[in-house]
Length: 282
Image (cartoon, rainbow, N blue to C red; front, top):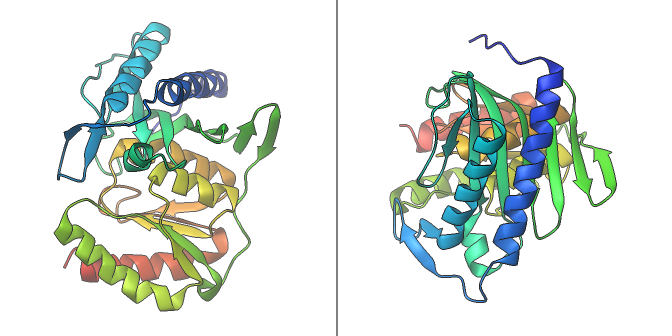
């Protein structure tokens, strides 16, 4: 599907806005994190948790975005959102990696992306500006369509690029798992098939950061099933703009999202797509 993107001037402005609001929400979730984080609610299963700070972060993002861009729509993971008339939707994850946040593991992020199209339609939308911010490490991954991707830490900024890995048996592969026991069991079968074919597997707990890790060359490849638009929107853009390849059955989405260094495209996409069909989709 062809989707018209805003011009670069607007995309640059919205990338800067994404970075600004992601940073401010990131500071909120760190600075106001209680000594003992408690589960405020659960979603799909008892292990799919929401903390009070997830909602507070989303409310903060929504308020900031509505103030700056009142005509844009906002789609978030938690309760609350906004309709719009501009044709631009902000897809936000207030804390990607909530279980890590719950346990104090420093691998969680605020993800903010501006997209065109309908994020509820597989293959019917595309991010064009966004940022992923890990507030614990003070790492901000930012990108806009056609302008590359970069990592900003303090006053230091550098362009991102994936690894030169071109052999599946040398690939360090990141993945993630769902919350429902049946889905996790089937995902485990795919890992069992894949593990002998690659260097090793990593499971960090944040899809947004996993996609950015492919962009930064910290892993060679990544795949996961069951992702929602807010899990992948900004990370997808960062990975593509860094030079990685990102795909899925109908593009990145719930059925499958994968990303890898360009040299792994054929081998990696084939093995994860075949394995996903066999173990997860019948």
